[in-house]
Length: 116
Image 1 (tube, rainbow, N blue to C red):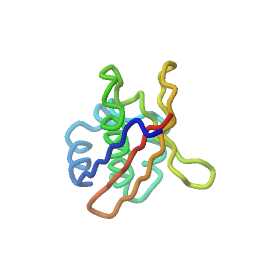
Image 2 (image 1 turned 60 degrees about the vertical axis):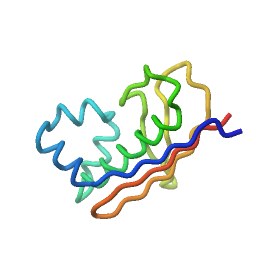
Image 3 (image 1 turned 90 degrees about the vertical axis):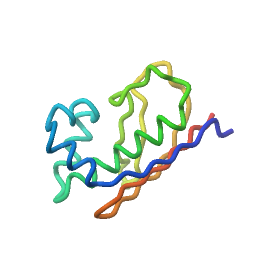
């Protein structure tokens, strides 16, 4: 049974500007170390940061019932086949989350579905 669905789209430029303005403070506030490491190994890291930012926003929208959930409570990684995986780093979260992420040079979009 689907409990929630969230979608988010963001301009990559917004993330680029946030990184330029706040640097590591922004990155460390929003992203887990594994997410930072993943994005930094790419030629255009802002695209990958934007994709993970959109995924986290989509998860926030899908969950919407947990106001105590923070940016770094949501971790976006990939499985061995490259599929995005969302992990909630809180012990009391017991639902399944499916995410889909895509990005271009200018935009990143993500969808999250919360299911039992």
